[in-house]
Length: 294
Image (cartoon, rainbow, N blue to C red):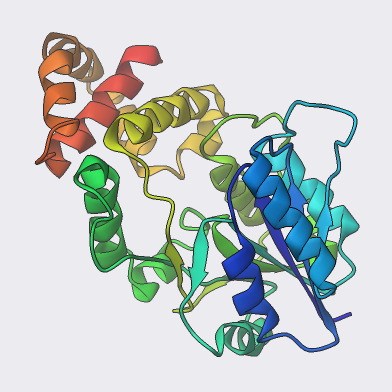
């Protein structure tokens, strides 16, 4: 088999994504949706619809357990279940942009055993309550051109949309210690770098649909920063924020950042959760929060 498309989901409707991808597949390809303990009855019904269509299948690795496996373990389970020579990992909250999405990925396999397509965004913010995440993603998309991603290939690997040879993935796998949101892709990128495995970045974006409300997103960022604080120092160097924090610490300035953050945290949150969140304040909030927990 040529290609296995792997879509982990937990209480998210990915039927449109699956059907759009099916339109680009050949008989040599497969789609496996990994149901990680979805509890929403409507979502369960949608998963049954995918299963009954006959073109794709739904894999539930933890049938006898009500607890989700988590972001890393569900992807590893999907990879072991897959039959394709290549694995294409896609998050459930993605939307296909191009009718040649699969073709463009397969054409790029001649350059490297790992290929990253990138992340795109909706043309407009879906709701005023989602402004913090939306503004951040728009700025990130502008900043992270293909050229910049290729300059820093390992730190810019994202599990949202990437292709990898199956045998290579199974020799590494995601660290299943990652149960909560954030940075499992950073650690995976570090493992690729340690093994000198090349990553090729291309412009083959999927649109990110899962734009949370500002309060939910800020909570997820705090979870991610707590996760970041627990990973090994060498791996943290791949992350711009923690790398900058290390520099501040060398010059005895991290304590000052920590102090300012504690004094201004309430006001920072008020801005970030308001109608006009400031991205520079958001950057400082993340740095300050991280400094306060390490």
